[in-house]
View 1 (tube, rainbow over the protein chains, first blue to last red):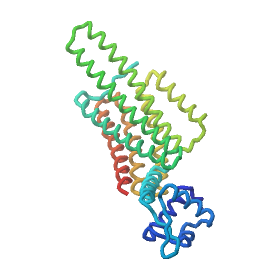
View 2 (tube, each protein chain N blue to C red):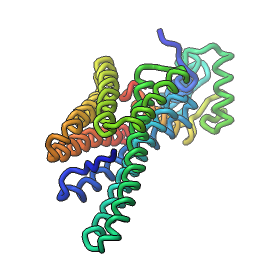
View 3 (cartoon, rainbow over the protein chains, first blue to last red):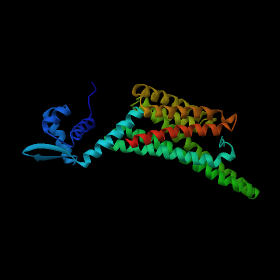
Length: 89
Length: 225
């Protein structure tokens, strides 16, 4: 199986949040992103720094939500992936 | 030796418009790839962008050289004999320089695409190939013929690589890309025989345009996603 690069992992994390209606529990995200807890938190803190993802409390439970920047990333990544596949880059 | 290969005179304006369209399409692909290189920080997209920028520049230079040469040519028809001699010299200089830059930029662009397709990653090999391109475009006596022969050869490699990519991916876009470069390869083959029949130039330009339009369609389909 091909190793995922950084952008692919970021895209997978953001897609997992998007597919759950824009809001996800950390345990679900851990399962969906297929990463270790430590790695996932590293990625999430970077995504929060870049304002793609935000953390919020819902009835005392921690949730991660996707921001507009995150949606923009998914859109752009999809186009570039399509471009790359079309030209075999 | 400078060859004036513009095809039939009635086609001159249409030729300039078609080249401008090709220039815009090459520029669009280059800009998109540049954006991808900034987004991903991957060098392959940067080189891909450079290749298409060079192809766009090549069309721009050819258009400019043709337009300047032809505007001088009009003066030759109407002015006195002394000016005719002067203009002919300037026409030759403009066309020779423009023609060299057009050939060099186009072949360098195609060479970069070939190195990306063949996964040539060493700069030594790239420089060696670039050196041969320079030698063949600058020192060759049959520059027109050699240019189209090398372009056809490079486009054959690129087309085969994109066809192999389409075979793996089986998508509409990968097909359009393979088709685009196959058409460009055919257009270069047609250009080789222009010296036998100038009307073939029109066919070559139209086939080349179809290739670029196929690239434009790919670009639009990617943008729609």
